[in-house]
Image (cartoon, rainbow, N blue to C red; front, side, top):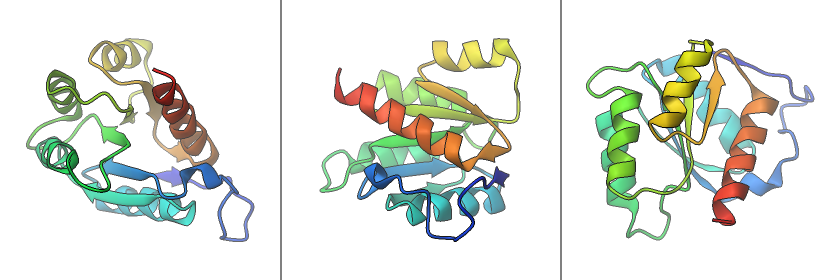
Length: 147
């Protein structure tokens, strides 16, 4: 679920820093996945989507040698096949050093701490507020660029 706190004109929030950025949205709920993908596309991002952690790992690892590798992952933590926790640990073990941002309905401190310990760079609770989502992505991309 996404809560849009935008400007109401349907033309995005003016965050041109997402222009051309390749972001992978990993979410098993098709409506949430579609909403997040559309809003990121509206902000200029190149968006890939999948519905489970196994597919996410394959997309990220297969894309490393491409002209457009994944620059950030929005990872739902509770999914079938391979959950976001296991997928994050696997991506980190395989050397993926770009931002992984946890998406979860769980808003407790222990869940956030678990996500960070497992390798997520940041944590966003659902429903996702558009402006916060974009600012978190930009912050993670900025921090990754200075590593």
